[in-house]
Length: 461
Image (cartoon, rainbow, N blue to C red; front, side, top):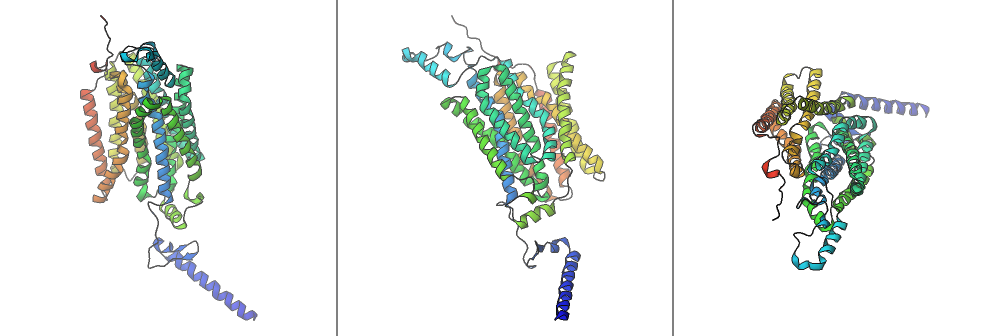
């Protein structure tokens, strides 16, 4: 009986050794046939879900977060028209009844009073409005680099979730901040910019662990397209809400939407597939096996450089202005510095493939130098049309963010046509589009207030 048991053990051990050897010697594609200790049928390829999968769910949640961030960032661009009574240049809406229908008679004052109670109106000059518009951008510029670094250290779930909650609560607070005074409003907007910059910079660490290389373009384009939808939604319904309920409700509605998105984010988002509770075994193995190890510091390095360069760009612009450079000259010089070197470095990438350090340096500098444009063409709308800066900036940003949708599609087309030189051709197309836009701006760009944007003075006889 004992001899029989020993012989059985030898047979079992031999079978285990044989199986382990077979798995070790098989190619990677065949080794994947043993998942969680279970043998998979060799004749059928293992099915991994695509659209109805956890990784695409992550992309959709990132889409919602980007929708929320950009919508909350752009709200004031559409509500400023209602917050400031610029039609007759009066300090308060109920201070004058000129222009109201004469058949209202005694109800004129009551109508104006009700409207002003529903939606307060402020006497902000165009210059003050410019400060309000730009106050949120400083924080966004400062925190995108540190946000990416923090996400690499603490995890995307915590960093972006806290940023989303903070931005949403501050959005709800903005109507009260406006009533408390201009200083409180500017401080609120500045802090909100810090939270939004952290969220924008921190989200990219998510794809370091969730996006397989052959699906990275699709997943990132789904996530980033939320920015376009957010701008579109605010421009579409912001005016309607302001007219029907009053401009504060635009902040309340989008702030509430942000709180709901924040709740979904904390419940459903995980930093990596390994820690996700509900992901299937095949999808988890597919994602993990397809990813290469990435360095968190290298991922955040371009954003840190962009943070520093963005600040220095503003200092450089002010320095040139102090040396009596014309404003339009300063805007164009800064725009050239923010356009030409980055795209030149991108075009050079296919020719420096052999050097890992050079490739990383080129990518970092290309991303880092681009924020110079923030002190150039990005804010040029405030120079040429302060009255309509909100509309112009919101529209231009919406059009610019469409590149998040177009680039992955065009990139996929080039790679399908030519897998060897596809990236090189895409980079040259980027060069052509970039330089065409730069030439148009250099030829036609202005920096003085245009005639069509000047305020009209009413002369009463």
